[in-house]
Structure formats: structure tokens, C-alpha cells
Amino acid sequence: MLILSNENNFASRDATIALNTYTTVLRRPKVPHETFANYWRDVHGPLCSRIPGLGWYVQNHFNREQDAHLWPQIEGISSFKNYSLDGGVEIGFETRADQEQFNEACSILFADEQNMFAATVAYALPKGSTTLVDRSADPIPNGHDGLDRIHIHLGSRTNDVVAFRRFMTDFAGKIAAGSAALKVRLHLPDVYDNAQPAPPAPNVDHAVPEERRHIAVLELAFANPLERRQFYGSDLFEGTIIDQKAHISYATAFAVSGIYTYVRDKVLTTAGLRGSRQAQLIETLGAANQISADVRTLIHKGKL
Image 1 (cartoon, rainbow, N blue to C red):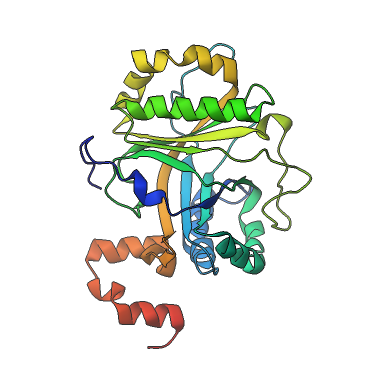
Image 2: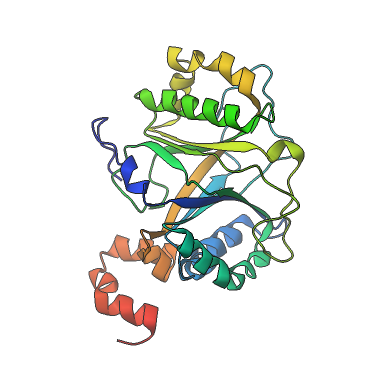
């Protein structure tokens, strides 16, 4: 994927995602990671992509084995306890009516979660998420694009929702103002309510401990780990530490091993239509016929 200069910012293309959810996923403990990842990408992914109303669907797969320097250790800010994840999902909509249409049909999707997930937690973003910077030209990545991508989950130190949102918005803005981060996307979900577990997937755990009810998720991308580590040592980042201590109680970062886009602007990508690995094969072999209108109609509708 081409990474362009700092004069190019594609953040505005995400503005159509008016309503969003960010869902954390943990695989079933006895499902091998490769089996889990392939099923999620190529079985569950295309199923979700076809649910009516969907405007945006992206899987972020996490790498549990990447180094421990994803986020700096700051005195007074702890890691979330017993917090392992295999991915984070965005499911978004252009309108409330679209979301309601999806919700009416989503049982066919959530019935599939028990095949691979031990736990999923859907954090609601009724005002959407905010992309401040995105230097990547590709709007529909499907795999590992060479960037150093991370998601940082941050727990609020207080119960003051307004103050935490204000701090996180300012914090993300300061990171975006620098030149190191090639992507800065901020998720500020509603406080999670264990009394109303989401998503409604049977035989899957949806409960969270108290410290993970009020969180923010900061999505960052750098050219490489060295750029990331140098940024953490910069004056810009060091200047935010006092405020971080005042507003953040917990912080855990997850390395992204691949980002897979199935729907954008209500349109199925090739990954959404055929499966992620199949889409990669089509691109690798330059099989242009496989993305022609007649083939897409045949695959999607079952007739020409």
C-alpha cells in the first residue's frame, strides 16, 4: 500500500459512518489461532457483509506475540488485568434506519459467533468514531499492509464521562498534529452496561469488569516500530504525560496483524463478497474477470 506525504490526509472518507460499534473479540480457547483467523475472515466475514443495512465492516486481527513496547509504561497507569484479545471489529451505519434494519436481521449473524468466539463485547458509538489522520491511500485494506498498527484501550480514571471524552479528544488531536502518526482514529463509546449485554450472541460471554466499562480506544499507525518508539520519546508525547496520569487509569495496547475491509459505503468489497483470502488470490493473480459486474452479480445473486 502506498503511504503518501503529510500533505495527503484521507480522514474525510470515514465521515459517512455516522453510527458505529467497536467490538472486542476473544477466540474460544481450544480453537487454534489459524483456524480461528481463517474462519473469521472467510466464513463469518462474508456472512456479516450481507446483512442488510450495513454500511461499514472492518476486522482488525491482533497479534498476541508482538513485543511489549507497544505503549509506554507510565507511572500510575496500569495494564488491564487478564486482558487478552484476538481482534477488534467496527460495524457502522450511515443512518439510524440502516442500523435498525441490520438489528432486525442480525440474529443469523450472531448465531455464528459461538463457533469461534469465547467472548465479544460491543461498545456503542451512537455518534460514530473520529478519524483525525489517515495517510494511507487504500480505503479497503485486506491484510497486513506493512504499517505498524496498534489499538490502545484506555480506561477512565474517574466517572466523569464528559471530562474523559474531552481529554481523549484533545490527546488524539495532539498526536495527530505531529508528523509521526500515519493514522489516528478515536473511538469514544458509551459506558458499557452489563445489564444489557451486547452483541446478542448466544453462548458467548459479553460481560466486562468495572474498569473496562468506561473506555476509549485509540487506533494508531506508524511507518514502523522504530518511528513509534521515537515518537513516545518525543517532546510532543512527553508533554501529554501529566494529563494522561490525571485522566487514564488503565492502558493496554494490541498489535494489529492484519486489517480486513468487507463493506465500505454500503458496498461489498471483494473480500466481503468472496472471502478475504480469495480476494487476495484474485489480486495476486490479476484476475480482473473475477471482479467484473457480471461475475459479482452471479456470486451475489446466484444468477446473471
